[in-house]
Image (cartoon, rainbow, N blue to C red; front, side, top):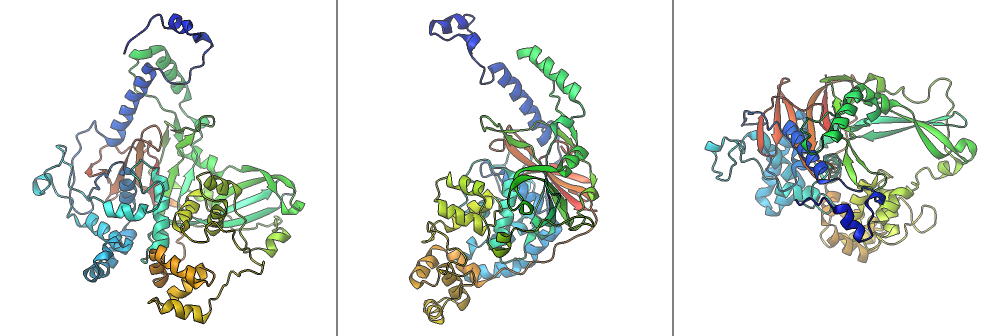
Length: 547
């Protein structure tokens, strides 16, 4: 690096006045300091400063990195630490393995790959000491062969704009995508059942005080991090002052803001003010509302996200909060227990007349539609995606788009209920069903494809060849769902996933899992070792088990 002591004068020669310019990026010194701090974060989360003892055998199988797939490896390791999930695929293993004997193409089947991956991880076959393995490319740090989850990643990420590629991704988003795929495409019992819980949203009209309760199912609990609640802010301010004064020679260990978990729970439970709320009590006039969220049920396992990732409101660049959250080994969330609907003295905020007349009609969220349309998809196609996924978010709608964008009617306006052109309960004619069945399909498959194409046989044939996976699903309907589990609100920490890096688009993930209720183990791709100091305060995702 060359230092120019006369830089100000040289720039002035070209009409650039340094004193009038605004700083838009970090200096080399600042970037070097930040890099040193990130290296420190890496060492803390991976425990690279300690001589860890490698472990091998059943339940200690690592997953090889396919290039930025540590997010997948960490999420899979965490889910496979839940015995009920392992049991699902171990019980189905023999049946799925038998199928492959008669159909080699079955190797690309989702259920087969799930059973294969699960068995490989718990059998210990791929978790052997280097001296016992036939792998010659092992690192010198006692890594193990591990499993290379190539086919599993291809199947799970198929057609997804993010997870089908090789870039780093958000582990939380992958967790949701994985559960969505398993729920929609697997014919085995849904493994996310032990994680799901019912949420009760309470919405109070700010003008009239009337209330409405809305129930929905969630897979995880996101907690905001209130930076203003830092319990060591004077220490942080002093550190930042020393850092600024120290310049290039500053070598101190970073002092992060420390937030208590109780502060996060308090922020989560605080009323949220919703502006521009159209109240049915005011005949649709705009006012404001107060919204709170509580849990109606408590699952066997609670998946918690600490909302560390955000985006700059001006540049829209993603960044991560460099903060510590004091996560307890045991938590009690009884303060978040829902009261259970309308309470004495409360007046219900009823649906508007138009909502009652069209209670089965879903009005698409314009924000989600616009966000999808900005990616280049047709407006009508985006509108359908949002309606069919019931306004559940951009990711769910995007998944629907990727699966249906080749449909012949994808870009056509959606037929509205009651316009005389179609019905939600469309029944194909017996003649059309017989025609499709003559091509070798079952009656269930024939009815399914004809409903998708409004009874048009020619379009049905095109649809069949462009959606072979969905035709197989139609012939093998998924098993019915179990009722949600519920019980006490006390939990103990079972596992955590940590991220190192400046945003979810870069960096690395590792997973720490508590084994035998006492010993923690670190899963760093295919490196598995006993953990000496699990980074409980720095993790991003947490798995708690009901006590």
